[in-house]
Length: 532
Image (cartoon, rainbow, N blue to C red; front, side, top):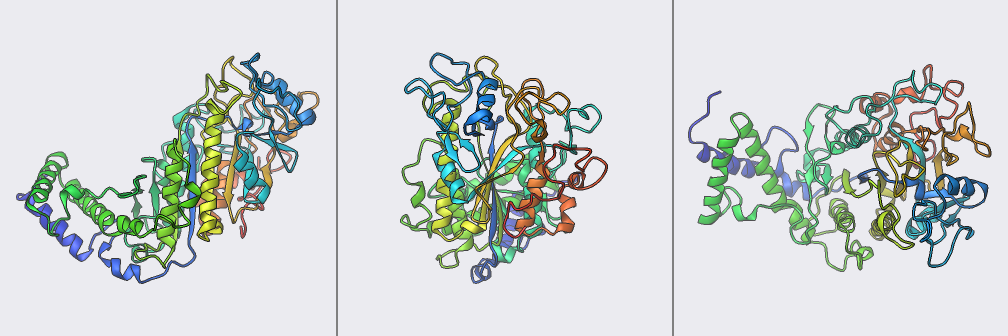
């Protein structure tokens, strides 16, 4: 491969010309059309927000039986109620006060409609549920096809069921039989629903505040690749502007010019042609996008703007600042009344919070520590985000959902829990038909099966293995397809995003006789989202 001469001059000339003309061949080109973009409106804005709980959340302590015999099964399975005398216990006191001892146990579960109990440190989530803005998804997990204990060894199972990396990838890809697939379903949804560049001032429709994720990798219907835009939580420069380098061809002083030339030289050494050319184009687009579009748009938001107010007083966790920044990005992407709006029509966001791999120290005190502290953070952050969307009139246009690679074993390992399979997730938004639990909430018993039911339980609502690892009765694919349809993906295009989707709708194992525990034999989750 021959390298051209004069690379640094070529770099400066090429980037300067690119920025002046807005011409580029790939990704989201034509950044020079900023004035035209700012003069247009954003029809039908919608956004998805994926909140990933990295490590495997013990979600059976997020939503649990509220009281009565179902709670008693839960209590026994989880080694009793945690107390200062029973530190290996994982259960929480019932919503009617059963098992509660002041100062020795956590508070009782919060009673909500349907006979359920919500974790006592998640008061905000319980309120959102009762208001009809939040729905829980019971026993959801990665699946290739419906599966029962009787068919566990004969039907196809996702690879490396209890491994973090593989299950994270499968949740984000949207197909449970290929952890190496290059694209995620969030990126594919964005690629099929987002408007052309002139509407968005060049901003990609996929935006991350938690580094690279497979979830946001995708392409358009024509095969154009999408690369997610990285946003920071900075108040002043949410997009990295590389201001110390100046803008190529735009009144850079001698020091900025020198730094730019040094950067070009490094690119020449690190990346042979043709990669150098494409990388310098990406760099040039990124610099202009940050300097000319994103940062000025954020600067046009007044500190007293209603989008900021629900987050006041929240600090101590990156999740608060991540969701606050997404709220602000939605504000500048959908409000034509701002001085420097961006005006998108579809966006997909990714945020994450780690620390959910609770092999030890899952509950460490009667108060909000360890796992409970993380759940409290999620509850407060999600509530602030939804209230922010309400404040700017975007609540019914934005849907947030949680994901985690798997749930945890029901019984304790002595100090915590281990990797399992199906668990509980939730969806929040004004378009969510909330105050409901979708899927089948199971009896929380160990080693439960249709062939050998545990007395006093209903294994038809979900079967477990020996330590309480649930076989999912709702597929990740069905959640993804439901949210994709709400975003505007056609029903005919769903199989492109979720190739295994129809394994849950028809065929030899997708029916009540072959898969009696499975919740919905349909592509989407019935009733979850308005208009789907």
